[in-house]
Image 1: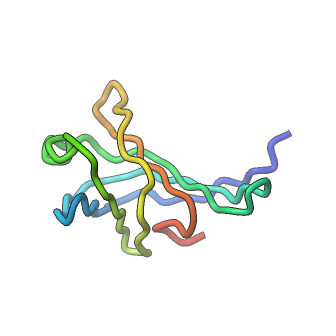
Image 2 (image 1 turned 90 degrees about the horizontal axis):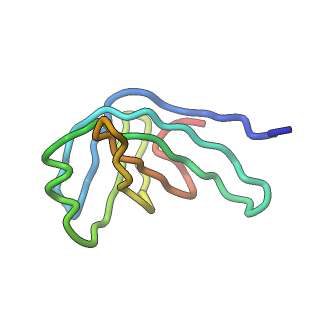
Length: 96
């Protein structure tokens, strides 16, 4: 039995990658993990060649939505449609 209740956001986002802003769309979800006591959020960001060009080395990423912003711990793992996986732990960039 899965006790996770997914919460999320779908819509426009701004990714700040190494101090450069990139606009896009994202589908985000998240849940509270009782084992570690933290909120885990994740999703996919729309394909964007400008974003791909910034991912050539170590990056810092902040994800902003109209509801809030949060640092992302990981950005990468493109799917067959070029959408990038994004994830973070802690306060998400959307209302819960």
